[in-house]
Amino acid sequence: MSLLRSAVVCLGAAWLTSSLLPAQVKSQASSVDARIQHIENSIVPGTMVRGEPVQTKMLIVLMKEMRVPGVSIAVIHNGQIEWARGFGVTSIGGPATTPETIFQAGSLSKPLTALAVLHLVQSGKLNLDTDVNQYLKTWKVPENEFTAKNKVTLRRLLSHTAGINAQGFPGYAVGEKVPTLMQVLNGEKPAITSAIHVENVPGTNWKYSNGGYVIVQKVLEDVTGKPFAKLMQELVLSPIGMAHSTFEQPLSAARMVEAATPYGGDGQPIAGGPHTYPELAPSGLWTTASDLARYVIEVQNALTGKSNRVISAATAREMLAAGMNHWGLGPSVGGSDGHMYFTHGGDTPGFQCRLVAYEGGDGAVIMTNSVRGTPLAQEVLRTIAYEYKWPDFRPIERTIVKIDPKIFDQYVGAYLIGRQYMTVTRDGEHFFAHLTGQDPVEIFPQNDHEFFLKDVDAQLVFEKTADGKAEQVSLRQNANIQGVSAQLTEREGRLIKDAQAAAPVRFKAQMQDPRTEAVLRQLLEEIRRGDPNYDHVIPSLAGIMRETLPEVKAEIRKFGALKSLTFKGITPGGSDIYQVKFESGEMECRIMLASDGTIVLLGFS
Image (cartoon, rainbow, N blue to C red; front, side):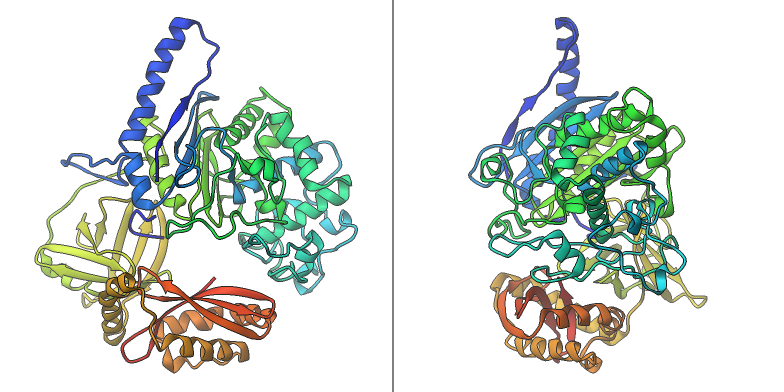
C-alpha cells in the first residue's frame, strides 16, 4: 500500500430524480447540489492536523495527478440514490463519463453471486452446509488429505474459508483463447491458471479465493441447468432493477459503446481493451455505479423487511453476520453497534471500484477506469464520509508534538515494508520516509515513536530495544497494518539508498540496464530447477524468494519453455520491466540490480 496518493478529465453532467413536490424538489436539489460541489471541489486529506487549515484538492486535479480518466459515483442516503454523477471521460479524447457508463466490476461480482446462492437456499434448492460435491455433476472438488474430515460447503466458499487456491484471475486479453469453465476448474489449456483444488483444511482459516467462487459458479449451473449469466439475470439483476448490468463475457460490440475504456498506470489504454473473464461468479460483472447502488438498497431493504425480492430479512442478517476476518457471505462487514456496514472492492486490468454501505441506509459506489483507481476511490470515499458525517472512513485528526531530533536518529535506516523498501532520514528538525519508486515524504511526530503523514491516513510506528536502538517499524494505513519490518543491515541500506537515488534518472531516461536480461534469464532457469542462487540477491529479498519459491516455481514450470524476454521500460522505482513469454503463458517481470550486480528488487505478475 502506498504512502502517497498514487495514480483525466472533463466534468460530467448531474443526474437527479425525485418524486417530491416542486418546492421540496427545489430545496432538496439545492442541498444535494451543495454536497456534490463540496465533494467535487474539496477532496479532503487522510489526516487533518489540529491547528492547521485543511488542505483540499479538486477532484478533477486529483484525477489528472493519478491518471484516472473517468470516475462514476453514486451516493445512497436514507435508503435512496441521492445523486449519481460521472466525472472525466470514458476514454481520453472520448465522451464524458455519465451515470449510465458501464465498468468492469471485478470482484464486486461476488456479493451479487452470493445473493443468487442465498435465494436458492431460501427456496430449498441448496444448503449452505452441505458438501458441494453432492451438487456438482460433471466436475467434483478433488478429495485430498485436507478434505478427509472437513468438506467444502457453500458457506465456506462464500466466506473464503473453504481452503481453496487461486487468489486471483488475470483474465484473457483480446486475441487470446478463452477457456471454458471446465478448463479453468481443471487448469487445462488454454487456461493460464492452476487447477482449482483444496490447499488447506476447510473451515479452519480465512484466505481470499476467487477459485472458491468458480466452484460456486459450477454449483449454480449444475443445480439449475442454466448458464450462469442467464441465471444471474433472472434471480438478481432483473428483480433488483439493475437494467444496465450483465454477466456477459466478453461484452458484445453493441454494449461496448456504453463501456469505459480501461487504462494502465502509465496513462495508456490496456492493450486490446478489457480482459475477458470466464470466471463469471468472482469477476464477470459489467455494471454502473447506480446499478450497484440499487443492489445496496435492495440489501438494506431486505434487512428491514421492506423487500424480499431476492432474499428475506433473516437471510440478509445471516449474509452480513461477521465470520472469520470480518467476512460475511459475499461482502466483508465492519462498523460498530448501530453503524454496521458491508463493503467490497473490485479490480481488473484497467478498472478499479469500491462499494461501502451502512445497514441503516447510507452508502456509496465509486467506479474508475484505471489501475490507479483504488487510491482515488479511497480519497473520494473519505470525502463523502466527511460530507455526510459517517462514523467511519473519515479523515483522522492528529496533533504534531515537539520531540528532540536526536530521538529520531535512532530510527534512521532502511526497512522492508511489506515488499517495498523504505529509508528513513532526518534533515535538521524535519523527518522523512522514502518508499522506493516514490518521492520522499515528510513525517510528523505525534509522540517519540509514532509519526504520521499529512496527505493520507498513514502512520509509522517504531519499536526500540532496551538499549534504545530501532528494532522494527510498522506501517499502519487506514487503520490496518500494511507491513512490519526489522531494520535492515548497513550494507542493505546502502544498496537501497543508491537504488533510490538512481531511480528518477533511470525512469526519465527509460534506458535498459544491460545486465538485467542475462541475470533474469539465469534466474528464471534457477527457479524452474528450484535452486536460485541467493548469494546474488539482497538478503531481505532472498527471504521473500524462499517463502514464495514453491508457488513461483510451479507457475513457471506450468508455462513450459522460455521463449522470449522483451524489455518494456523502467518503473518509477527504477526497475527494468520485461514481458516474459513461455510456450503456454506469459508474465511480467520487474528487476533492479545494485551497482555491484546484486538483485535488489524483483517482482512477478
